[in-house]
Structure formats: structure tokens, C-alpha cells
Length: 266
Ligand code: KIV
Image (tube, rainbow, N blue to C red; front, side, top):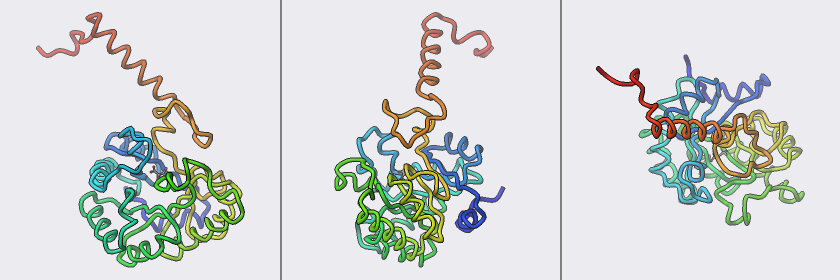
């Protein structure tokens, strides 16, 4: 089975095939996501929230991203695997970012990296793409800027802010990114950007006009959070399902019904 490449992702925009993406953070879920035919697995720094239990993605380190990405790569046979740059790396000089990208590639064997930001990181994206590193862009509600945004708030509602997000997306495309995430922006703005760009857009909280969609795995499986954000669809109530399995296990152990004779060795 051949792996999805940046060229295949680009062609999907041309041919009108929606790109399907989800996050994963470990080997077992990576296998499940891959077997479900998801095209692109993002090892997002959202792991800081759904795996590590932080309020934001900011504490995640480069070592942690490499650790999780290498596990995901081992689970994926067809899907392209992209590793998110954690907060702090892309705020550094472009040479530092290139060195970090080289580490990510050598140690995790992934297929691309994702960088949050627009015009401010375009030069860095250009530096990486010129060295043959596939880059996924990410504009709009970029979670690493949550402190500047004053919370996880939809971006680009005012015309001047919308124009800036469009300029950011164009800068990311001009710098050589092969695909771009549009997060937390009005659906009509995402549609405008998708029409203007030649590279595919992948939306999250950006409506249905994008060339593809991405969701955080633990959100779509209903495993994370008491409140479901408006843009998330929970395809299974995973927390309930897993919770009742664990309760049944606990009850069976306490009542001496597990392990049964069939689970023992002679
Ligand atoms: O970190 C992440 O999971 C992301 C996606 C939600 C796009 O950046």
C-alpha cells in the first residue's frame, strides 16, 4: 500500500476529492485511524490538552512531539503523518527551526511538519520548503496564540482581521506550504480563502467550503471534555462506552467473575 504524499494531497483539491484528516498521538489509535482510510494524520500539539491535561498547547516540548510522532508513524501504513511544531520553536531563528525539523524527520520518520502562523513565519516556511521539507500551514485561530487572542475565540469576524488572515494564507502558500489548516474562522471567509489558494485548505471550525476537514481524535470519539465545542461532531460517546466497560471489569473482579477458567493457564 503506497503512502499518501504531498502531491496526492494537492491533486485531491484539483480533482475535488475531500481530504480527510484527524489527529493521533499513539501507535494503537494511529493504526485505527489509518485503517479507517484517513488521508493525513496530524500529530497535533493538542496532545498537550487531550493527553497531558494542560489548559493550552503551550507547555508541549519538541522531545514530546518527536516521541508521539514516532509512535504514530509506526501505526500508519497509508496515511501521511505530519508533526506539529510545538510553541517556542518557530518563534526562533529559521536556522533553529530547520535544525528542529531535521531532528523530527530523522527521529520520527514522519512525512511533514506543521507551523502555526502567517506572514510572520513565511520566511521560516520558505527556508524549510527549500530544503525539501513538506510544510503544512495553519492560520486563523492558531492555538499557540491563545494568550494574545484572550482565549479560544473565532478569528476574522471584522473585515480588517479577515483581510489579514487571507494575507497570511497567501504568504504561507507563496512560501511553499503544500496544504494549510484554517481554524476557527467564519465559513464564508474560509470559502474565500479556499477559492483564492491553489494549495488545499483543511478546515476545523471553518465550515464546509474547505478542501478537507480535520478534527482532534479525542473530540470526534467523544473522549475529551465535558463541553462539546460547536464545530465538533462526536461520532461516538467514547467516554460513556469506555467508562461502562471499565465499570463492568471492576465489578467482575470484585465479584470473582473475572478471570474465568478460560483466561487461566494449565
Ligand atoms: O494541534 C492540533 O491538533 C491542531 C489541529 C486541531 C489542527 O493543530
